[in-house]
Image: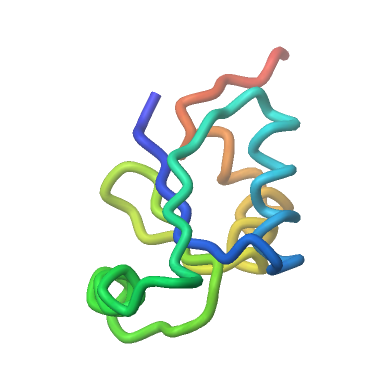
Length: 89
């Protein structure tokens, strides 16, 4: 299973929604709280090619994007393969 990193802010509803989806799938992630750190915000912006909104989600080497992007992958049936999960037939 790939390493999942989420840059987030504790008060962000989109961050909570994205984390809830991953928890629902039984997936743990590394949460990087950027609320009080200009250095971490700068790191997030650099890694996400200039995106400044939270969450910014990374699955392995893939920059997924934000919460809407994560849910779009889920709707398209592409999230589970990216997470290394297999669906029962």
